[in-house]
Amino acid sequence: MTPKIRIPFAPGAVREALHADADLIEHVPKELITTRDIPENIVRPFIVIRGAGTKGDDPMLRKPFVQIDVFAPPPAILRSEPHPILADPEEVAWDLAGLCGEIIGHTTARQFRNCSWNGRWIDGPGNGPQIDRSRGEDMPLYRQTVRVELTVTIREHPTFWWA
Image 1 (cartoon, rainbow, N blue to C red):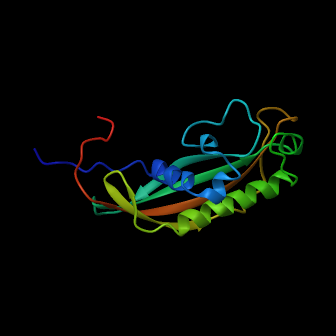
Image 2 (cartoon, rainbow, N blue to C red; image 1 turned 120 degrees about the vertical axis):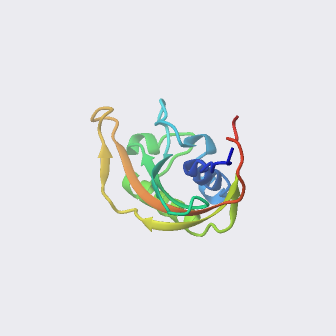
Image 3 (cartoon, rainbow, N blue to C red; image 1 turned 135 degrees about the horizontal axis):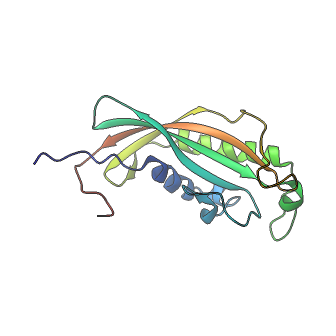
C-alpha cells in the first residue's frame, strides 16, 4: 500500500507557536489560547484559533490559512482584579491580534509533528469593530481577527500522531 500524506493540524501549529511566546503569555495565559470554543467563564482576553482553508497542488507542500480571533470582555471585566487592564476592550483586542500576527509572521522553520513551517501575516486586525452581543447587552465581546498563511513542508509519511 502506498503511504499517504497526513496534513498536520495547522491551528495546532499556530497554537503551539503562540504558547511559546513569552510576551503574549504575559497578557493571555496558555489555557486561554485554544483551538476550541469560547470559555464558559470570561474574565480576561482570550484567543480562539481556527482553520480557514488550505491550498497547494503538491501534497508535500501545503499552504493552510489560519484565523486567529482575539476577544476582549467589556471594560468592567477588563478592569477587575486580579489582573486589571486599564484600556478599552477594542484596543486590547487590536493590540493582541496584531501581536499574534507578528509572532506568526516572523516564524520560520518551526518544527511541528511531521512537518516544518513558515508563517506569513495575511491581514488584520482592522475588520471592525466586531462586537458579539450574543451573551446579552451587559456582556459584549470585542473581537479582532488576523489571518495567517503557513507554508508547510511535509517531512515524512507518518501515521496519525494520535493513532
